[in-house]
Length: 131
Image (cartoon, rainbow, N blue to C red; front, side, top):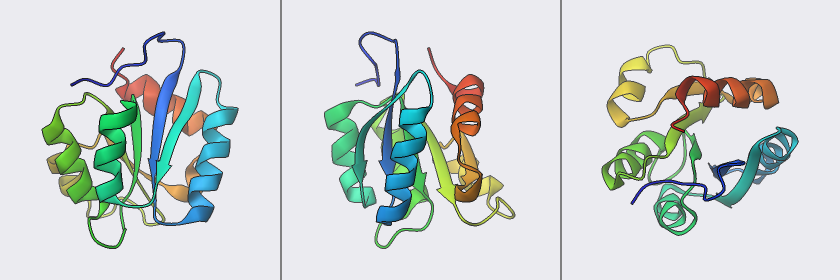
């Protein structure tokens, strides 16, 4: 199973975060970024696994800190699925001390939620996208 956007005109994004306020903000940022489309939003790692299988996103935004399955564990599961989706961890925390964990779980990057905007979304895809 590989992530694919059939028409390749847009990058399909799945947002995984336990906070409604960030899911709402991410949806607005994604919709405001030319070439990107919000596909789905879920509130947990477990829901993310099901959603990835269902919507085949090109890019998955994963909250680092969630109850139950956190972003790192979720990224490991998604990497094992072999979807080809680019995984980006998001957190209010900076990347200090987390670089090894990010690399070991299959995520392409860790970004701060407060820095999330269209220009960051575009630069993440330009650096890590797989088209």
